[in-house]
Length: 266
Image 1 (tube, helix red, strand yellow):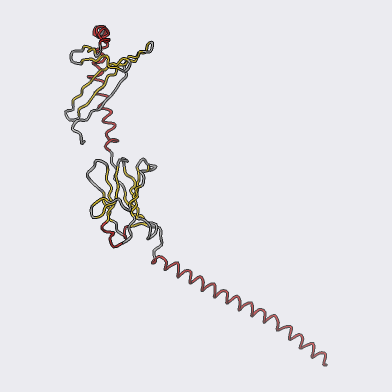
Image 2 (cartoon, rainbow, N blue to C red; image 1 turned 60 degrees about the vertical axis):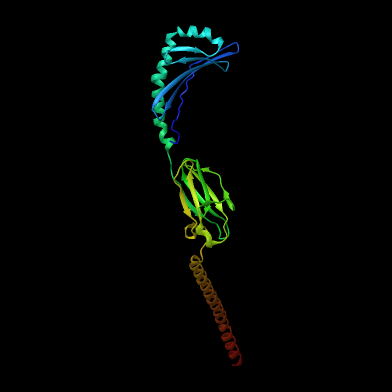
């Protein structure tokens, strides 16, 4: 960790006495110096929000922090049972509990999941979005750089949003017109306080988009032409067939009329 000394507090409210508007509170606590691995403790008591008494853990005597506490100090110094109770809390129970809490919480506190970074663009004229997802924790930065320097002009930052699996996502958009200068731009992702960075070059071949490329239009166009030809052929055939049926239906009537005229002449 960056700090040479890290303090962890485990507070326990031992005594809370309220009488006629007066409040007496005593709070024991435990500290861990991660540099030396040494535990230290304290017991502070306050009266109506002001410092009142403090237990000296070496002499096991109370120290009055205000003139009004002198009488209480003398009474509490004779109560060895409560002093031994505080001593056991500070020297044994609190260090054990604090160590367990640190062990259980270290995985969560030190967990780091790197993101999956993608370049997205809706249309050739729209902004290029650098999208990072699946990272943890949410203490992260992402920005666009040009020639190694962070830029702000033409850049729009999105909010950090949660994913359904407990990780996070974020995006930052870049409005850039000339594709010739694209390789001078990079998307940079970095966890706060970390040294390592994830750098993605603005490469047109890496951009994911939902627009259809010209090469992908070949098959649909050919299919459309084939459909039109088939429909035209089918339409022509149907027209020819209907015309032929109409002609065939008129021929028997002419033969009948001819036979009628012949019989009349006889």
